[in-house]
Image (cartoon, rainbow, N blue to C red):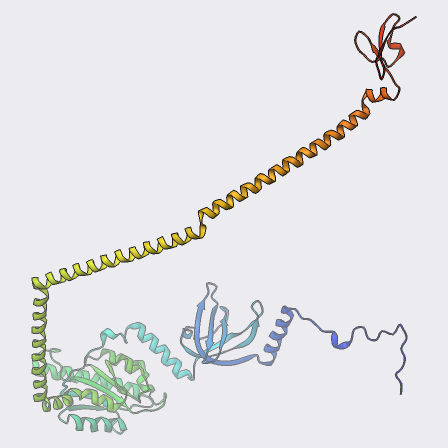
Length: 474
């Protein structure tokens, strides 16, 4: 079937549908994105590490939450009643709740914070952090108050549960490394309600026992310590299991203890308030026992190796003395006048060599300069330059002569033209055509009007050949 014919006015679709488009402004697009985020996502929890914390004078807090691959801008407005604001610190890992929105002036999405919590912890961890900051502000964790442990303790106080695995580990290590160590054991609960009070009571009881024994032995209170150190310990467990060692009553008892304290609570990754307050923190109960017995255990090895050690020390001392002797000999040699003189002579040789090197270098520079100048002079060639200048002078002279001749010919032609024009306008030329010129015979004034003459006035008429003199009649 043939195509349907079109009239000359049928132009088809001038604006096809595919060419029409809707163009948004940046503000309209940003507003749509903001509404879409707030509607589809809204309130959510996000975890990450705080960076770029900035507190404005207005009271608003701006920071960034980041992880290994991305980051999120956050804002906590002054009017938001959010607990744990003080947890916002650079490097702190937090879980925050907020509304995801878009800050339109910069076109960036951000989280408006509504709640703040520490990452992966609940109320116990928050309480732990609050107590930690409180005690740290009071100086209970200050490094300068930490006391060193005695290297060879003879008697220690032990605070732990009599049925836990911690006491078995401690006794096993002590029996293996220093069986002569005397242990004053005060049993207590290390988990559950009331355990913290029992631990604090046991610590104070050992301090009272130490003071009483010391005064009994010396007759003076506080003059000598009977117990060398205290060890509070328990095995690993969850945060709830270890919570008794995070109580303030235990921290105060440790801080007030007159005897140095070793804290070994939980496993290596576990940290409690008692670890921060104690003089020494051990990763595990077994590690604490090894720290306590390290001096005695190392001494056994030291005694066994004493002869070898002494031989090594003597050998090293001899080597040091021999090295000192060599150094003194070398110093004497360095300070000998002959050596100083030789050094000066060597310096003189160096200066002479340098001087000769400088003269030769300067001479080479002058040679190069002379060679370059000579080459430039050869390239210039004054005779050729003078010849070119003479040739140019001759050319200019020729051109000048030609211009003078041309100018002279031009003036001659102009003179001839003017002469011809003057000849055409000359009265003589007029006279040659049959005309005459009448003038006053006395003054020579040309008479152009009959009214200019008077009777009896002498006139002179000039013809082509000769003149006629006449007098004006009546």
